[in-house]
Image (cartoon, rainbow, N blue to C red; front, top):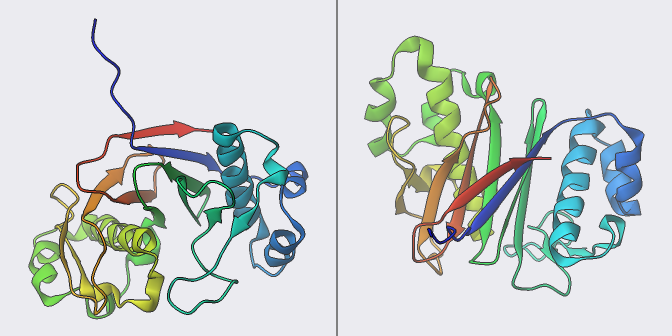
Length: 231
């Protein structure tokens, strides 16, 4: 009998929905933030998905889950990486873009997930604002028709690392050096002033949805097993 493979990271995704029932799962502050967004459905879907995923793993109702959002960099309670009150061993992260929302959960270390729309990364000046000079040759080898996808993949990897570390864009993405888009996802170098507390495991997340790419990172010493499910 083959033993089941341990799962270090669970990634749950769903398509963005305008179902008003999703807003009922959010707290008052989340609903106010959603209302200020240009596309409130994306914010609402992602945060409802996060609440549902957490509740399924810790018990209780999704609307009763309490999050702390203290920023590790500046101390603000408005934009920090969410942590689940009463469950310090459960790390969570969420992201949304285009027509999808995605959530990552792990008890093996701090987790970060990011999803990107391919077309959003296809712009002049991408290299200058995103890449360390050592990363540019890998993108130069990409065929023009595939360049948008390659850029989005690199950007998602960098964002996933920054979310896992808790720094977000307080650290210049050019200081997060990742493997080329045609290589397996790896953090090659961290050039931020603050050292990372643990090694980083990085993986691309295949959602099977055209026009989107995603990546997940985990602060842990060993390679992570990732399970991807749709909600």
